[in-house]
Image 1: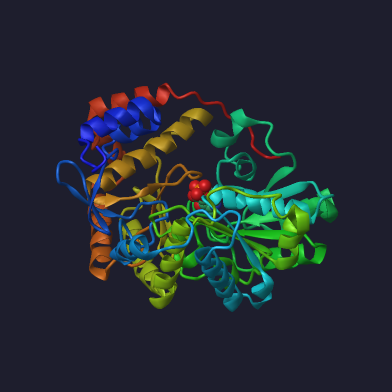
Image 2 (image 1 turned 45 degrees about the vertical axis):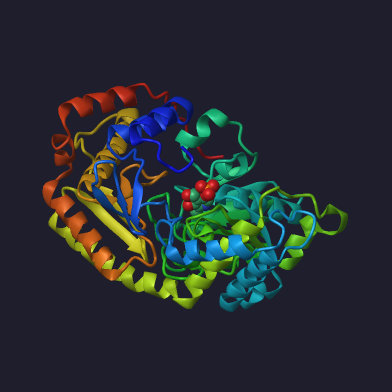
Length: 473
Ligand SMILES: Cc1ncc(COP(=O)(O)O)c(C=O)c1O
């Protein structure tokens, strides 16, 4: 068992019995439940020997699976490292090096961050929790956090409160008080909301420079720079959630900086762990950092595992690999080719693909609904969810592993590794094209699915408890 030789069927059985049964059952139904094994960093194989190009991983596998650059580094680390593993009560050379490198990288793009400091944790949602606490400690008398429609910031209570998705929020109400939603990309609406609340009442505005889980939404030009200017006038803290966009995914080191925003706090996670371990970081302007963690209050926010040496070492090596190869620039260029190809597929198959979007190696395909008829609320939601699930299955059958989008039901995203070789990338897009040829309209996503499987999927969906109420405020 410990050598990874648990048979695939037994793996699935144990997972369904002792783990997240419903999720794994659902994935298994559509044939994407794995377990998969690595063939190359960019290609995976199922138990029947079928290979898939991996464009999945939720933007957290910047170099694919088990990249040699990290595995070789780790052998050396395990053989030679003598620093403490979890140095909570002392300094650590690995943590020091990653802190310094992250701040210097950010300050290279945004010189006002030269005095920033870093707080490490072990997930994206935890980086957001930290950011919320830093902001609140900075503006203790203010009450409101503003985030945006279709935004996604995580699922712990604070981050969840900023993630306006009824599916994730509703049964957990009341959420963190004062969490409000403004329409993404609409600067005037934000201005109006801040004026209505009173600028002194607003702790922070939390924004993804490009929304990932919301379906790859790129804001209109001027939105982010205008947001920054508006908040600066009133002293409102700006938190840029770069957990999905940061470190090259969308073609820049920091997407917010590229779009003219100079945030007070930047959150990072996903790619910082190189796809091998969990590293989250909250980078904070010096004075804001010191306000929460100053003097004897320096333990006001803490965790056990954040900053652990192994995680820091992997983070540092990942950063080095990103910098030495300038992967953000590559991502921007490759992404242009990818988007052009997807646009061509969309043009040829408009009854399958409503639209495609993307920047860098964060690409989205939004499908036409499988049921074209007008449907009432809950059924419409279900039909939209079914669309993406069936598309995921068909893409998989065509040899491409893709991602669902947690806050955009009809959107499937492609997030290939930033170092995916050019020929593998082209093959991935050719496979997407073949998938479209086989499913020239969304209706085929249904008719290409065996009726028995459709019946099982319908039974699975019907057993889901669902309650939906408006999510604002
Ligand atoms: C922009 C953004 N913020 C926060 C998160 C939460 O990160 P995690 O899943 O590591 O908690 C995600 C995850 O998808 C994300 O995309």
